[in-house]
Length: 165
Image (cartoon, rainbow, N blue to C red; front, top):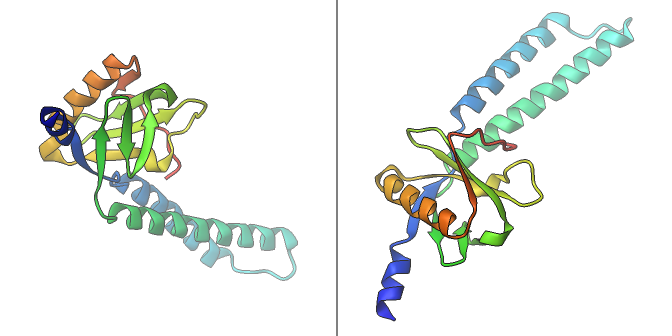
């Protein structure tokens, strides 16, 4: 009984949100481009179409800035735990049973991102996309691979993870 408890403790891994640096870089370029165009166009009271283009670019600027802020907040959020249990995975206090998982995707080799794709979803939910701390990465990947094989959950290595942010 005590052995089983110790075994479960060994399957708790510290995780954090993916860095999102590429998203921040891309959104910053988009943001700066639209700011430049808005400053060059200005508002022309005579032309309604240019006015529409101006305000649509303002909306894109606001959305781009919002995505950048949300990504930075997620990047610096507190670490959380990912636990491998007998019949489920627990990520951020959310239990996902093996029968509810369509696929587990691993993107990248160095500091890989892990995405758990639930059945019935085409895009990985943001809260099920994470990165394991580097000192536990190898052991976590071994345990996750073993768990996926035991429960016949598809594990895709080096596959793109589609997520909102």
